[in-house]
Image (cartoon, rainbow, N blue to C red; front, side, top):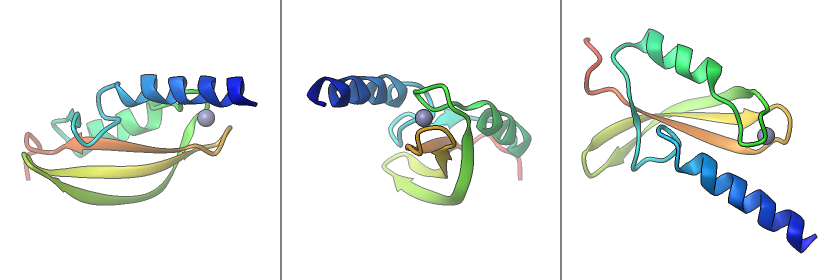
Length: 90
Ligand SMILES: [Zn+2]
């Protein structure tokens, strides 16, 4: 049981270091279409595909980031995807 949870947390750390997986490191996108493409290709650390639970925004010291809250269809892990919209044309 202990070994299993250790594996789980190391996998989560690896996923959290990828761009777009933490509020400190949002993925910079240029269009909402790009956001949709990235979100549809994003995978959980277990390899499962994600489905969207909700969207929101979060303030950071460098501005606000778009947050997509997703859940893995396989292991039900919640995965947040963070996007920097500074280059999106309005
Ligand atoms: Zn998963």
